[in-house]
Length: 578
Image (cartoon, rainbow, N blue to C red; front, side, top):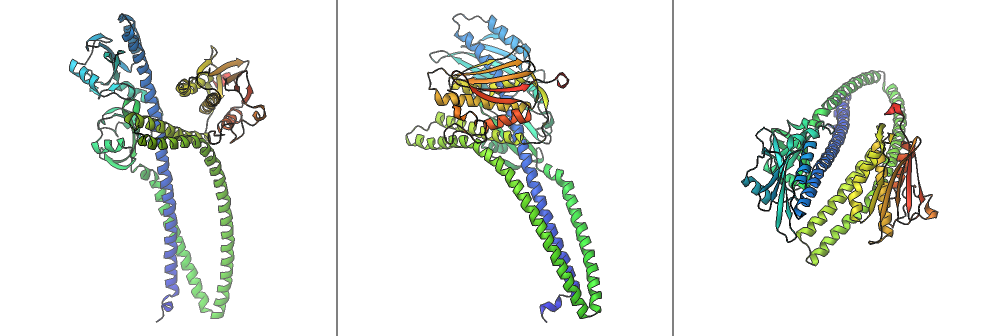
């Protein structure tokens, strides 16, 4: 019997309903997987943001105190006569101002205490010898593992060794830092949500954690297999930790031999999307049931039509088929048109974003390429030593962090949910200067900042304005490095003044200025006066959009005596907005 005779109307009805239910289910599965992928990407982005924020915050917290310890102690060991009174006053004053410092000890070359800031010293001579003999971090510090104090608090000791001109050890400075204070300062940062943040030593011992992370890092030492994986830089998809499956990522704090760990529950995404998945299943069941009922109705109508005669059935089927085909064509045409419009909109937005990011990434990618090529040359000429490798890694990681920051800058720049707020323009400029001050110094650029004696309150987007100021200072630096060789005076001046109800910010350099024929084009997108491949062409365009479109201000440039002077004019905030 031919197979076609087995496909009765009833069987056709069942097969059609089953096929449509399967197709609908596959569509929902694809949508659910897409939703899950996007949610995982968002979680990954949240972890990267948290790691960057906590890492930078921790580095700045220790760097400030490290600078005080180094300068004060270095000055003492260089004095011909060893007066400790001034040095003790500096340490005690700083210890009283900053609760992070629990105690300070200065030792001479014989490891004998010169003075102890607070009497409750918990270090014996054996522990001091161990601290001094520990391998130093890249910043010069020797960092201890957490130590439990008699009062129940945990501390960590930072040791710095000072040397004479002949290379002999001149003395030692030991600072005791409160891990409780670090944890308290973490509370000032934004909440970590479902992620857990913790600061760990190189051995895996926990130093501090965000308040929301206590349950996630109940164990105070990371397991060896997790610690080894993190040190190799792996992004671990799933690891059983504290009896729970978690996703880990980390960021190294190389200067102090620490690393920041961020983790989240592996099943958190599924729990968050469970209502949506449940809703999709419910919708699928309802639609399948409705489709089944409609098909049954159609089947009964077809059977009734068959009873009236073959001719009537054929006519009805022909008309129904023509109507169905016309409706499907109309719906298909409409759907395809809508898809084309949506795709064009998406591609336009993606093209704009990708083009901007590509211009920003070109220079760091070129730099990374040069570092990689230079490693091969160094290997050929037997120059590939530990110091060279470390320098190349540091340079490459700096470029990669810059590229990561570029992605975050562009993402935040195009976010629609930005809120205006009052801010002190002087502090915004000082923050931007702090990000680039070390680079200016490394290039022998003299930098000065002229600031009024009163705060200048403006109203708008603080972070975006800080990015604009940073772009202007970077442009001034690049102009000087392009046109002025070492040995010649290199100057960047930032001036902040007030004129009635307006604040004026100027960034002036002695890099030769902007050619007159290009003066009107410097703020155009993707236009740059630098050599091919060295300029982004986006920085000044972004500055113009931030200042004029988002801040109701004005930005411009003119040539001063020896270089270009970019200026920003912003209205001061009204009293009701402060």
